Length: 111
Image: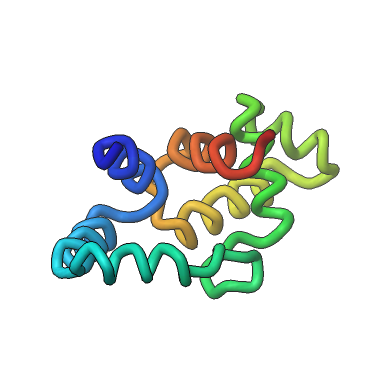
């Protein structure tokens, strides 16, 4: 279970942030970890660093395997604008690749 959680985290945050989170978790007692898990609130679109609605929409289309040109045609925007949305979303999420963005969009936002 821990390996699965680490695998998901690696696709969602940078290596440095993952190491820091693991270090913090290792210093917690079991009671502290359970308390933290029970009181942690879900991340919302209002949180700093989260993607915009348009960036999320573009990320979802990336997860469908569409190219920037295809996404642009579907949304009525230029491929350059699509590329900017992809870059901004990746930066905000700490992701290094378009593939990681696709995994993130698939994992978090598709039924």
